[in-house]
Length: 136
Image (cartoon, rainbow, N blue to C red; front, side, top):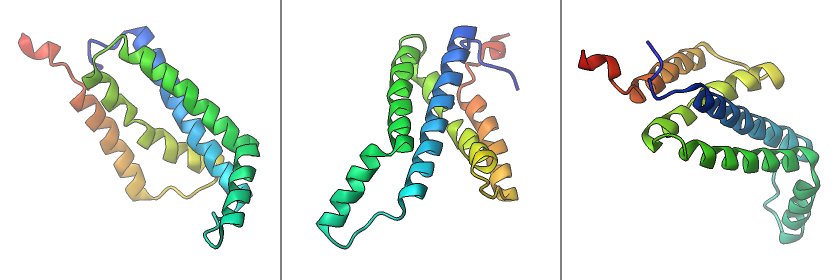
């Protein structure tokens, strides 16, 4: 397995930053709602209060900020490479999030998830392969 030839160091840095921001956004959201508790569905006053608490929760706010910067990074990445390369690379969050959740949130990581992570990594590089070495 080799990296696609279109992956320059600046593109790799943008992909890594995007993955980092998106991963931390999801970790922050999980930490925020864990602190807030389950979303109420009983009445509008409880739902409104929960939403206010969410808007004031530093983890939720941090997650929103991380997603905003991920969006800016995404646009910068799209200005440099084809969507057909960039978008498959975003699937690597299905690798970074479970690994980070296991490490930071102490969530269990099962063998089937590990197999899935390995398949995703191979799949991402297969889909984004530009076939540059196939033309020889």
